[in-house]
Image 1 (cartoon, rainbow, N blue to C red):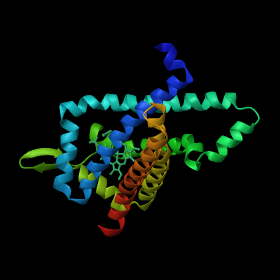
Image 2: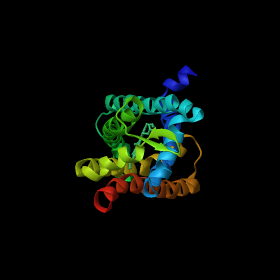
Image 3: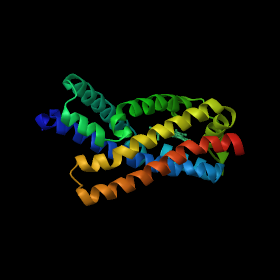
Image 4: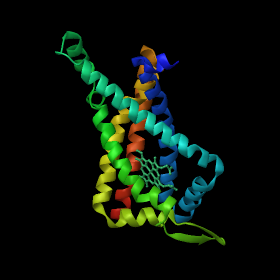
Length: 223
Ligand code: HEM
């Protein structure tokens, strides 16, 4: 087992598995964020359910582990490939020709997303967990006013909104390659399925990027 995980296919396997797990997380996170457009009650109820439900709390360290494995193995594979890179031969040139811009720049897109994520966690997650988030009383129950925390930042700071837009575009481009590539690595693909995963991946990437990128701008310009 340790031998497999240290092999280059083993490392890619772990990256794909953790990547698919993060893709699922993003779908849930984007759905929750869409409730910002419904209104304060809907969003606060959902955010507080996520923050207090024991089953979801259990998922938090697993989510952190998913991010750590994905980022660590991306860096290991990148450094390993850098060490291997000799003069660009014929095979390499053909691969370059067939590959997409996203696939050649996954590590850079990933690093942009990581930078965004650190700032994002400081903006919201840190404040909800360790203090600084406003409180509100709903039906006699005190809870975090996560709606106010998020919307007051988006409404007042265009630079933050632009940062979220850049993060969302990088995420969309990353997912454009990531979805079909993960299924390919896990062996759930052939010529026909590769085309299907490609289409599903692109639709997913566009929807996710639009939700994450446009919500901050909506609050700045229209709220
Ligand atoms: C419109 C864009 C976004 C909004 C409004 C938003 C909102 C939030 C909020 C309010 C939290 C804190 C939740 C809590 O602890 O109760 C949070 C946490 C988090 N966000 Fe986002 N987020 C956005 C985009 C993103 C993106 C693009 C990513 C990933 C690339 C991301 C990854 C995370 C992670 C990993 C956490 C910590 C885990 C969690 O609390 O669920 N978010 N987000």
